Image: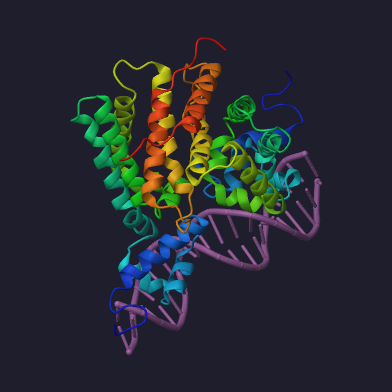
Length: 192
Length: 192
DNA sequence: GTCTATAGAAAGATAGAC
DNA sequence: GTCTATCTTTCTATAGAC
């Protein structure tokens, strides 16, 4: 309780400001000048803490990516069953809700995120594919895989809820999880 | 069959090139130099056909936006019923699938799209909100509205399917529509 | 750790000849 | 309608003093 803008952790302040600006107006449209301005330092000082704009982005999305991969990797060890399906999907929902503030940056600036991931990208894509396939259940048809994609997309709706809405996170989680499971269970009717 | 790069419609060629580049690497990361290069003209010539980069974006998303709004506006005239719900949701799916190539640009560069919409934005947001509320059914709870958002998100999965996949569009449509309806029908179980 | 100053590149856009 | 040439602005990033 000594300073207004926190003591020596300018680094954290930069992180916060960047996250806020990236979320609000996108990665490309946000300049380091703006970030520095919001923190109250100069661009040059910013470079003391982060060696590039891309590294700043990496720092922001890092924990999210790690959490997502960790959950998805669970599909490599868990045998498929309705119960494990529910469990993993629930874990996925938890991660998304936990990182709700980082979400917009991730979904919106995919291009920049992909570039920032660099060598970790291949791994993540492969893990994601395995997860989606696992989610589709045993011997999945094309439609099953489509449903798996849709179920994942469903959980993404958590990002479209503004955090200051008076909807408790537990209700968001439950509602969307049930919705995603309903998607997986849905089957096209006889004909149409 | 007189020319390689089509006769006098440079404008259409610019449109195509821009759509391709925007989809591939994003709006902000694509420069007018790149677009001009791909078309085989200079930047200056490009400005003869489109007065700004933003107008080029407007031209690209224009028909999509109009179609989406048109479908959503249907909720203002149709009385809610399970049948009309299915009908409107189906129309929404059709629009998304129809504009699949434009989709990535729209979802990815939201910031730029919002800026380009400018005065049409307010209208679109309002229409979208009414549509979502209508979709949630009569006397919707918060959870109902969440499900409506998730159902819409569901249909967005159509954009994540690469067009050269050998999945027929009709199957995509049916599968995702049933999935979205399943979301709307899903209800959280007793306790958890 | 923070600053001033600036390098170097690339962007969007315009003027005016042909 | 297309070009060359150029303006103006802004960006990321670095050098070096304090």
